[in-house]
Length: 304
Image (tube, rainbow, N blue to C red; front, side):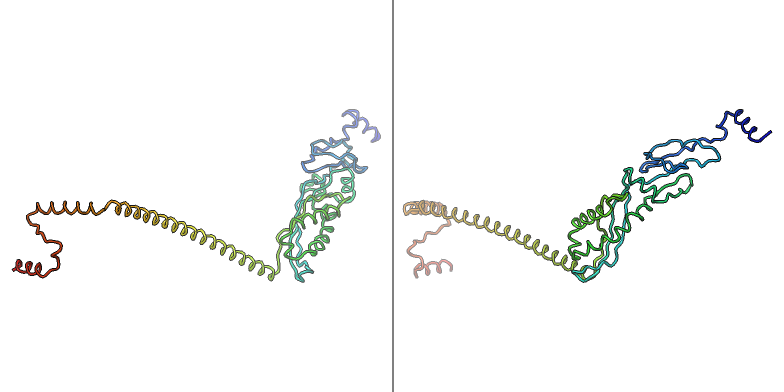
């Protein structure tokens, strides 16, 4: 019996053509990726968002469908620029540039990536993927390599240190314009890790030292002024106390001088003499006899 006849008999027995076909692989489009099915006739038009599905069946003698992924995740990058000549200073400096880049997810961009960038097998050889690293090498790195130096070199080194936000905005805008029409988009570019020449670093350190010295002197002057103000306030309070005491003494003296009259003094003398009269040990000496020879002789006789 001819072989073809035998094949048809087998096909009929086992359900026809399904015997000679295999069920398509179960595949996944993970998050931050888009997928396209690669058939024997080429890529299908549909872009597949993150999902899980099964590829179509195929006969064992045919090439089966494959899934190809494109990474569309936000990707951080960093580039170093050693020895940038700064014409205004006639010096060189080095710096790094960092930023965020991603793939445009429109149909035109995905078509371009699928046709121009080779998809590579993953480590387990189960999936083909167009990685972000490969995309950046083709569409981003050649552009940014030549874009940063001309913009940064328009500034002085001190301006680079003090005008970073302005420079970052210019770099971001220039890079976005440069990649317009490509499959990638630039979200942010910023300067980082600037390394200035020693002469600039020393000048900045001295300027900082002067600033610290000035601020210290201002702080000392402020502190001393506060101390002087406290001393002045204390002296003012002491003077006020002295004036109050003097006024009180003056008022007391005035009151006393008004109260002590000749009549009051005569009355007071009589009181004292009356008190002495009641004292047996008291000796009366006339006031007019004080300092006379007679009184002195009498005192000396009594001592003998």
